[in-house]
Structures are given as structure tokens and as C-alpha cells.
Length: 277
Image 1 (cartoon, helix red, strand yellow):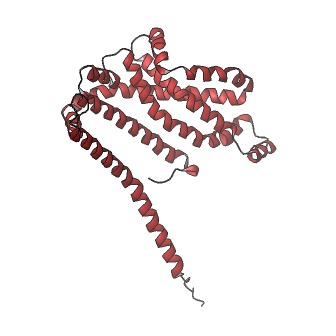
Image 2 (image 1 turned 30 degrees about the horizontal axis):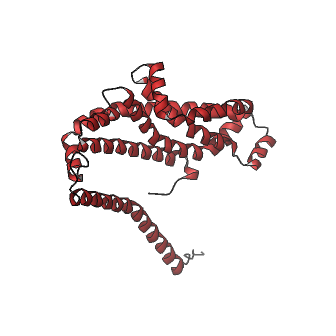
Image 3 (image 1 turned 90 degrees about the vertical axis):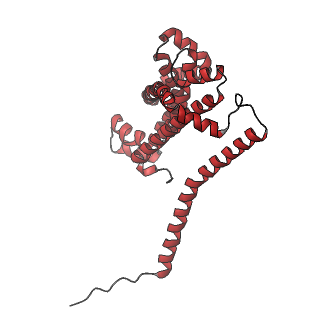
């Protein structure tokens, strides 16, 4: 009876794989460590400037004072973050869903794209602070104008990227779909939509940050709750520590929102996954 001969393992290949694995692990650790080093450096420079130049606390607080404010007023900060988060997430969903629908229409109806895309560009060039009072007059002084402002900020980048993604399909793949007598629906879902997902998620990651900005700007126009309202309150009361703490809370929420979209991208776009971090 013949016996199986074990395959010979090349030691050089094993060593190369081990070196590659170690290099990959070092790169991952470096990507995780360097932001901490950068943040620590900025905090050190901030503290040195405040203490070295003896800056008055009402102009610029020390990092320790801001941390103390974050701890002592954490409940108030979270209470004001909640409406801002609702406005940002609602505006994010509304703006991106409308952008995806319109991009789909534009791709299939070029006449509509030629007629209305310049108008959309024109509306996008209007500053947010100019749009906000108009939306307050149209929608009232409730949560609706804040959501609308966040949606408008998210809308244009997603529209542009989605149209580009839907249109930039491989010509050979498109020709193959025609040869196979695929319907427009099949071409859209099996080719165009799949091709557009990396473009779409690039826009969504931008929108995740800008939606928070839109919600905060909307709160400046007239409200008593939210991150935007708390920023105005802290500024007029010369409470610089609360001002910085509020800005940090808003920024942390924006970063968390960004990473949620990144995680969803890794789960959905497996064939075009971003690098491991």
C-alpha cells in the first residue's frame, strides 16, 4: 500500500510569511498609536501656551479645566447632545435617501439631469447661514428646520458621488449585460448599484460629519437646547471651559458617527474594503 508523502515546507517561504505578518501588525499598531501621539502633543502645546503665556481663563481654559468641566457637567452636556444627535441622524437619513433617489433618476433620465443639476449646484452654493433663516420661516422654529439644514448639507456630496458611481460602470460589463438581455432593473441592481457603493460610502462618511455641523448651525438660529444652543450660551457668558467642553462633545459624536458608517462599509462593501485600522 502506498503511503502519502508529506509536503515539504519551504523554510524561506515560512520566514517571509512571518516577516510579512509582523510588519502588518506593526503597521496596525502604528496607525492606532500615532493619533494618540498627535493628540497628546496638541494637549501639551495647548497647556504650555495657556500656562506659559498666563492666558486668562475666560479667553482660553487649560486642558485640565476642560476635563473638569466635562466631568462636572457631563449630564447637562449629554442632555443637550441628545436633540443634536436626533437632528443630525434624521437629516443624514433624509438628505442621503433623497440624494440616492434623485441620482438614480438622473442616471436613467439624462434630460432631467441636464435641466436640474445646475439648479442643485446653485442652491448648494448658498451659504448655510443664509439658508437657515429661510427654512425657519418655512418650517417654523421646531426641530424641522434643523433636520432640513442637516439634510441639505448631506445632500449634494452624496448626489454627486452617487451619480458618478452609477455612471462609471465598466463598459465591458455593461456590454455583457446587454448580450445577456438583462433588463434595466437587473443592470441597475446587479451592476450599477454594486459599482456605486464605494462612491456612496465615501460620501456617507463625509455626510456623517457635516450632518452634525448642519444640526448645530440650525440650533444657532433659535432654540434653547442642543449643542449649538449650549455653544451660544457659553460664549455669551464667557464660560470658555464649557464652550470647549461642548465643542469636544460635538466633535466626539461626529467622530463616532463617522466610524459607525465606516463599520457598515466594511460589512457591506467586502470586495472594496478599506484598510484595517
